[in-house]
Length: 247
Image 1 (cartoon, helix red, strand yellow):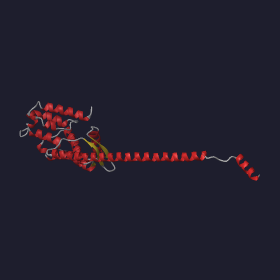
Image 2 (cartoon, one colour; image 1 turned 90 degrees about the horizontal axis):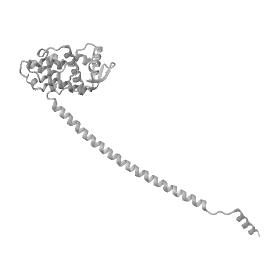
Image 3 (tube, helix red, strand yellow; image 1 turned 90 degrees about the vertical axis):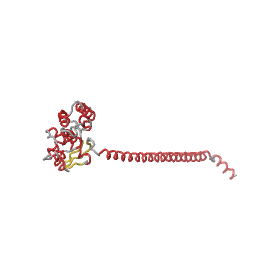
Image 4 (cartoon, rainbow, N blue to C red; image 1 turned 45 degrees about the horizontal axis):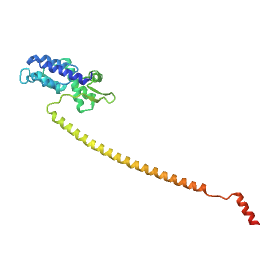
């Protein structure tokens, strides 16, 4: 089963579960979702009416915690940790994984020093173990660990939920990509048309050359035939002509 299908199944499970609880009873659902090692999308859970109803209530911190896991990073959590529920080790590990995804959105080369600072990891060995065992083996990122340059080269990173206000820029990015793709397609078609034209010119040129070669062959063949068929004087005839002259 591929990662996307598993992710969809986890999302459906927690959406259904959240739909069956209200108020403080959602605390266990939120804790389970934010601790789950393979769930990395939360926007569908945030859209559940029962969850949205937490806004402005005494249980609003559950909604804020879900939003942190949907859009935030470990360093952002630390800045407002006093206003959110304390995290258990599984939640901390999960938020650090999500932090790597956020960093990989805009940077394809992540320096070890920046990663260790952002993730509160004290040494390179611990960082590389985290990237390999907790990120790459899970399939949420792929890349190369460059120990010489002390960096992680990102080849692939799973996307996170869109942040508030990010939809407009995403639509603009897709529109720009579509425009570039259209222009590229037009350019490719023009090059194909040019290639077809040059192929036709080349075909005609080869045909002309072949016809000229055939004409030359025929001319040479006719000349050779005329040379072979020209009459020659025999030795006997030459001898009689000489005797007649003597007499």
